[in-house]
Amino acid sequence: MGLWRVILLRLVGAIPNLIGVVVVTFLLTRALPGDPAAYFAGQAATPEAVQQIRVKLGLDKPMPEQFGLYVRDLAKGDFGQSLSTGQPVLTELRQRLPASLELTFCGLLFAVIVALPLGVLAATRPGSWIDHLCRVVTTAGVSLPTFFTGLLLAYVFYFLLGIAPSPLGRLDPVFSPPPNITGMYLIDALVAGEGGLFWASFKQIILPAVTMGLFVLAPLARMTRASMLGILSSDFIRTARASGLSGSTILYTYAFRNAMLPVVTTLGMVFSFLLGSNVLVEKVFAWPGIGSYAIESLTASDYAPIQGFVLTMGVLYVLLNLVIDLLYGMIDPRVGIEA
Amino acid sequence: MSATPAVIAASPASPAAKSGGTWGHIRYVLSENPVTLFAAALFAAFVLLALFGPYIVPYDPMASNTPEALKPPSWGHWFGTDSLGRDILSRVVVAARLDFGIAVSAVMLSFIIGTALGLAAGFFGGWWDRIINRLADTIMAFPLFVLAMGIVAALGNTVANIVYATAIINLPFYIRMARAEANVRRGAGFVEAARLTGNRDWRILAMHIFPNILPPAMVQVSLNMGWAILNAAGLSFIGLGVRPPTPEWGIMVADGATYIVSGEWWVALFPGLVLMLAVFCFNLLGDGLRDIIDPRRRT
Image 1: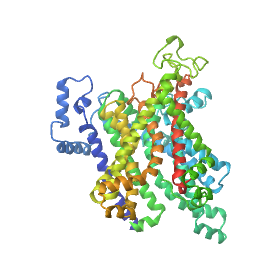
Image 2: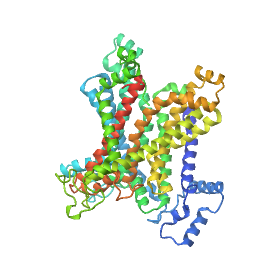
Image 3: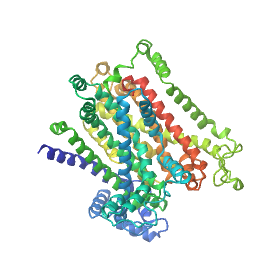
């Protein structure tokens, strides 16, 4: 009962942010200098075409009414049309979103798998080499320009060592994509039971995922270490030690679970980094996600897809934060009582 | 952002730090942490490059020399040459001014506007607080780099707009920091005293509360600078803002991206390394500043 109430409250709490996202994407196109109709019509458009688009977008109407029209279009799933491909923006975003999500989650998975043990080890052995390693990683990690790390990794593992496949796209052209279920090749290949295909797409995703993971490793490891250090020195751990509990019970059952709370909170920031760097990594590895869609549209001065992209990313981020909030409530039951 | 573990809070405060005052503490931190000293030296070097770079470079950064195109590093060209035969070292050095210029102006803008908004929100509370907080939340509701992309794409593809976009996405950090600090102090004794002696609200804010938020703000500025450089380079990497012939680290890396899979590593490597070093320098400096200003948060 309490849990459902918490979920409901969080859902309601996310609504202002969703409204904010919609308002900002609207303002970005309408209230800013320049003629949005000319943007949407493209550079080669005739004045008549521009006028036609102005009427179609409702740009000749007052601002609040325009906003109403914009929201109505969004509700109908009309994100506008891409000029360069002629496709509705929503269709293309939907086709490409799984690729971006797959990459983002793989990057997060890599970061978590490396950062949590690193942080815990650094906290339990202060002053050891692993502590120093952790410090170097956390400071160097946030300084890495993702696009540069990606290029370096591609150079070393593809060009020099030849152990990675060519850094172009999600799948080697000799393979055909698995039957579309989730759109994420790794999962779809597993569902279809095609081991070879899974391995091929796994090899393809490693470098971009590691690139993204390296970037967000730092805040995660830093937070894990700091929070673990704080917990390990607290009274209840001392009591547990004094009561003769084994080291691993103290570490995993008592300390780790409590230390994870601030780490889960950092996940919000981590996702902001991940989704942002997603765009850069997709460009470096020619990954056909929504980020490269936005970049292709930028080059073609095609604004509708960019607007759709910013909106999608904003909504996605709000939803991810919602999930993090809910997760937090599940790890820490006290939150439920307060709310 | 980081929680304050009680254990480290207690340990580093040494007698030297307590007795020597601020300078003693700074000296203590620098001697304890030579990394901060190194970062400060590196920062000075970057500033010199940004100021005098264009006068000391060996080649014209814009002059192409096709017979010399894509040559690996040599005595003539330390960092090699790019696809048009331009000297990469000269371009990397000259780019420092633009990259630093973008970052400094963006961070200054968000510092001034963000701090003012945050102070107002924390000090006056009520509707001010609600509206300004909502603004910060709305900006934070986006992945920040994506929002910057959207802003530059909408406002138009210029360097000035990169500055505005970077300033906007950094606003919430200053708003929240200033708000929290002003909120804590608005009922403090010295504020009451200032009010009783007849100071107006804005004067209390500017003369009595603002100086108190400068220390944490400086840490934020330093950490933000690195992030602003990364952000600007990232935007130009995907083709926003700075236009191609202009030397800029992000564009140069993008330029080199085409050649890295065929083995011409130097085109992307050197601008990328320098970019990394600049960001690294600001992050180290920020951490060092934090140690000086707020010893409890040392990690």
